[in-house]
Length: 338
Image 1 (spheres, rainbow, N blue to C red):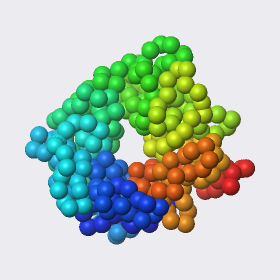
Image 2: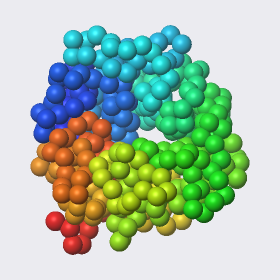
Image 3: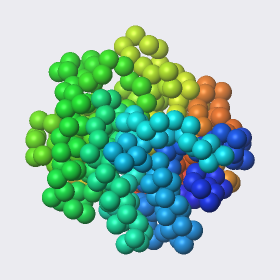
């Protein structure tokens, strides 16, 4: 696990979204989605180095500037320091609330934790009609509850998120609350699990575990992960399919980690190991998606190899997944990979 490419992509303003190879694309600017992911990554780092503490403050300042008075968030900031959109409650709101929640619970300094909680409490006043946005925000609420078990805003958000995501069908063929898998799918299952634990609803908890169990089985092929491609998946589509995105694997790793903590079942640790192995080369192209030389994550997996570009989203996905791998004592590529 390395933060050196994340540091390369960061500047005095925030976190640049894209890279050409490892060179940051300043012309494409910044987005709240990635800065929020970055805040999660640095606040979850054990014993963060001073430069990571600086990043936490910088990312928090960026999110604060992006937030409107009613809790909603803008997403895109140009390199000219001008916001390019209006505040909303789409994915960027959900990810910002997630990042603020993690920073409120685990930020590296008291000042970061205090300001993050203030911004989080403003953010959770809003609601989104979109399940993914609500799921991301719910993960921030679950983090706040680790530090503040009676936090009313977090409990309410998790309850509303479970309702927005919906109850999965009883069908064994498609036990998923949406008609198509899209992106970061496991975040929906993880948020449902967290909601079930928070409100003490065993049915909601079992729904989340059932969703995750099916998703993990669907995305495992020949002993390795073969995840939902960027175009999505529904019954009738052929597998394996590409372009596979690191964000899908990172979401699955987070969900398996939570399921393992909640249930104590080792099956989820096996799923987490598959996620780590995917980054280290146990995937459909048999090629590592984490560049040990640069510390960057590659932006996509095709049938013939990996995308050479190492952007913020993919780099953070690798960092967060490999962090889970440290807990497993998993430090090398799977047997047979190169």
